[in-house]
Image (tube, helix red, strand yellow):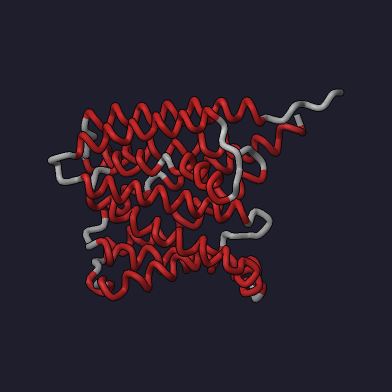
Length: 293
């Protein structure tokens, strides 16, 4: 039983992080402001949340942790900045279901980038999963033709690519604490959005939503999700991350009555089922063999 306790801890911590992250799309949709203003406050508050945690935990050592990341930390921050921008653009130009289902394919694209950049081998099952997911995403795009949301779907694809690049960069620097790069990303996002935003035009209620998102939801969620892989395998983390693709659109439907298109439901079902099966296969291949007693 003792040997399973860390594994159970990893599952619970990761699941808690993903559950905290699921209202992300809803909170963005609830804010009645333009994309640039949302990006500014989201980035600034996220940076305050991340660096506030590190300053309380590590004090002046926080500066050393930031410097230790080096160029890879800056690259990860830039990629996460772009992913944040495309995430908000996707949610403001297409349905939450479209955006979150498409973005959920990021782990597969990360495997592709790892093959291209890190020269890691990709199993045949992953190649098949990538192909099937592309087919599912194509269905979602078909449903968006003529509906004015195909640009948002394209932003979601770009977001998935940026997340995949960030995951690949963090994997390359796996022996370094890369979480502070998220705080740098928040600052970069705010600086990028500032010239196009109207920060002081935000209402009190909208600012409350943004504070909940930037100071609580995002730092706590990503902090817990970062701890999880220390105790459980990457396939298990990916499987738990699928909860956002399912619960994220559910919260939007529950609060805003946004009903997904039939093509989104079908394409999303294909993508999620493929990711579940692929994750299960990867876990069975990579699960540790119990030591002989």
